[in-house]
Length: 56
Image (cartoon, rainbow, N blue to C red; front, top):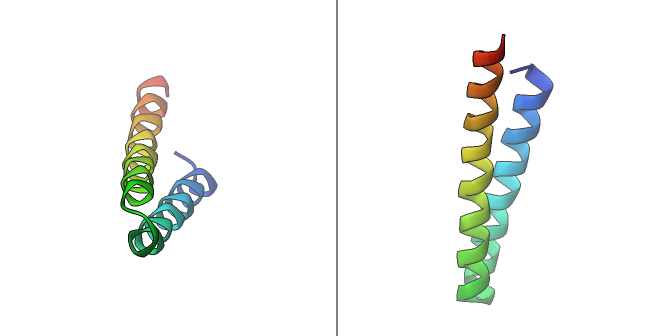
């Protein structure tokens, strides 16, 4: 995976983690949604990395 792509996944994951932390005090369901989106973003980063490694 290229460095800009990994930086993008890292920054987006951290932003979703921050959104999860903020939404805990606002709404429990929103916090759960943000946590799921955070896990999805981290998992999709690993999936993209594995597919690019297999391709090249």
